[in-house]
Length: 218
Ligand code: E4P
Image (cartoon, rainbow, N blue to C red; front, top):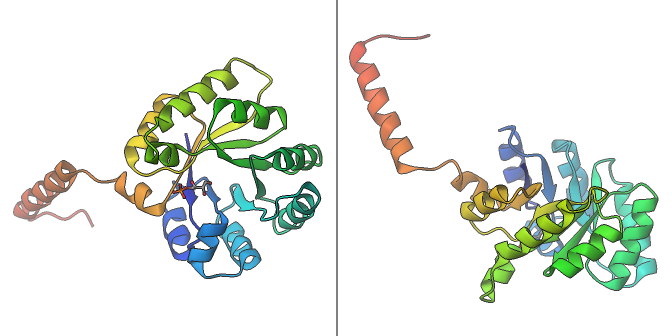
């Protein structure tokens, strides 16, 4: 399973990319706002740090303007993936950009039917939002199960299932069990994945016993 970070915070990206665990980045207009940075500048900087796919989202809602924005964003760096919303104009734009050789991430997916439309539109990635579905009292992970099942039933579908709106490590584990291709997570969730109190306790005990041996490795 590939791990993307869902953030536009350069410090987090730099720190976690150095771990070798980060395969790509997703951003959205809300994350850009939070970063306080100029959109194009921050996307360019992220692309210099992370060689993998970096999603940058269009902000128009009509096909012609989305297309122009997508083409502009794609020119920022070779690893930019243009992100479009799951609307009729968004999918039309996805179709066109994909045919031009630009990778597209279709975002704001909440139903298997929407995911099927995105695949038919040539999306490189579909982003089903699990956390926002959980937030309204439905089962976000059921959507991942449905989309994975549908996509796997057709060998010609190459669209990758990118689990989005991740809130905690259990979302990652459940999505991995279902065979989702990618999970995009806030930096805090990736950090949480390292933790277990027995790891801390065990390490403290090993270090205490090692100190008693009086030995050194280096
Ligand atoms: C996906 O690419 C989105 O940026 C993101 O996962 C949305 O997550 P949220 O529901 O936590 O805002």
